[in-house]
Image (cartoon, rainbow, N blue to C red):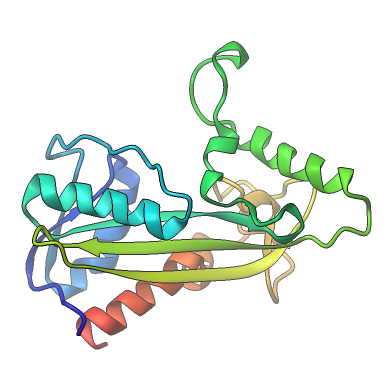
Length: 209
């Protein structure tokens, strides 16, 4: 039987203020007061998993154990069928700049170029099927946990198009659409995204909505 969240506080296992705001807004209607792991001064655990589920659970469990409260974490990324489902859990790593490439940080154009270069090396007839995945994990300090998986399928395009998205959004066209995630209204993207799919499953299971 699935354990469910009650009211009160929920730790969001992130140090990113934007992610806290986004997730907090999604959960606000259900009586949850969200606080970030960063605001609590919790350390960020090493994401040593080889799947989205493993990494989401690592983050949720670490936050729950350190705070003594229920915690929610997410892990997400892009998978490309022709590249053996890469970059997958290493989606963000592909955007990491090395010390000799300039200031530390993530260069998403570089990451998109890496994906495109690998596809072109496979030949012009290579399928460009891809999908975004999102796993949401909830963990309780007593050791219980539950996960919800979301996905949105599409294809990759080149060159990048649009300015309103982030990450790999400028090269991803969702199934049934002709514009990239970076070209459509954010509200439209959020309604069909991998994160929206995962949250819909979480809400249905946790709050019976």
